Structure formats: structure tokens, C-alpha cells
Length: 244
Picture 1 (cartoon, rainbow, N blue to C red):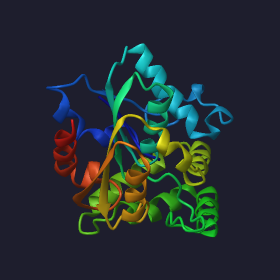
Picture 2: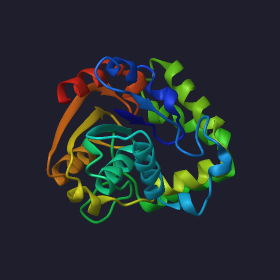
Picture 3: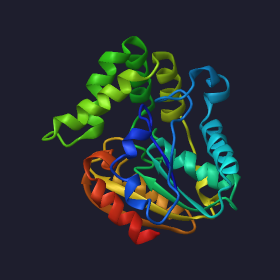
């Protein structure tokens, strides 16, 4: 079972969830190139201008560790990265768990991703202007759970540790991606985990993902915000255990 973290985070974001599965699975956590403790010398802006490259990295990890019928658990943008990895190597991944997924953040006709193009342009411009200020402002909104400010502080600290240039590029890749056409290609069994009051990926988006994937089920967690792996780890653990 491999756990993939979301934008601006690292493998430590799974520390409250991943250990619960070590009795049944060989558990793997890692940092995407450009995040956490990864070797920044391997980061190439051109290569990582698409989330496909991050999916290729996961397949490479799977080949190195000889994955077979593995489960990939992806949070936020890594939900789509995990989906792409499963399409690239269906023999490698039998199941995908998507935590707060969105195949497209920008509204498009009848599809409501939650943001207008102008909203995303403004978000990216703000990030480019002042990475630290953006991190401190956005973390509480993304995390939710305003009664637990320590959670937002942890997320903000994680955002702030990311190299500003890599953060800008990964943000553009994340928030301008469109993977709706990829969803019907996923042959793995899929679990979509959704939170209430998720400003990044709303319930209607989560249901869209589950409806578009042939073998998917949707579970509404007893949790709020976009990061239940930190705010409600037991709910995440319980839902995944019920799936696997």
C-alpha cells in the first residue's frame, strides 16, 4: 500500500493513517520530487509541467519495489496522480483510494469544479507574489476546522517549506489540470472519500469522480475540510479498512 501526499505537503501528512495498515500490508510513503526531503537536483520544471510525470514516478517506485495488486492512496492532486498511475500500470495497482479528489478545479459549462478561471489566475498570481503570505492565508481555508488552529499551522508550515519556484509550478500544474477524460479509463477498484465543507473539492465534485469511474464507490466521511488525513485520521482509516 503506497500513500501519496497532496500539494505543498510531504509523506509526514500520512503519519496518523499509514501505520494502521502495517499489520496487513507493506506500507510505502514517499515525497514527490520537489517536496519534503526529496532530492531537488532531480526536479526539472519541463518534466514536471504535467501531473503525468508524478504518475510515472509512482510507477517507477512500483517497479523498483515489485508491486503487484497494490493499493495506492492519494490525497488531493495525488488522487488523480494515483488514477493515472493505475491506468499506466493496471497490473501493478488493483485499487485506488482517492481522498478529496478533483479532476478539474475550474468550472467548465455544466461542470462545476468550484472555481472560475479568474479565481485560479488570482490564486496563482498571489502565490507568485508572496509565497509565505499565500501559505499563511490559504492554509486555514484549505484545512477548515477553525476550532483546531494547530492543524492550519502545520499545513502552512508545510507550504512554507516548499521551494517557492517549485511551489508555483506545482500549483499551476495542479489547479489548471483537467483529468475528466481519464476517469472512465480507470479499471481498478476505487474508493472516493469526501469531506463536508471542502473548499478545494466539494461534494458534487467527489460524486462526479465516483460516477465517472466504472468501479467506484463514494463515502462521505464524518469530517470537514480538505485534509482528513490530519483532521480525522480515524475516519479515513475506518473507511479504507472497510474497502480493502
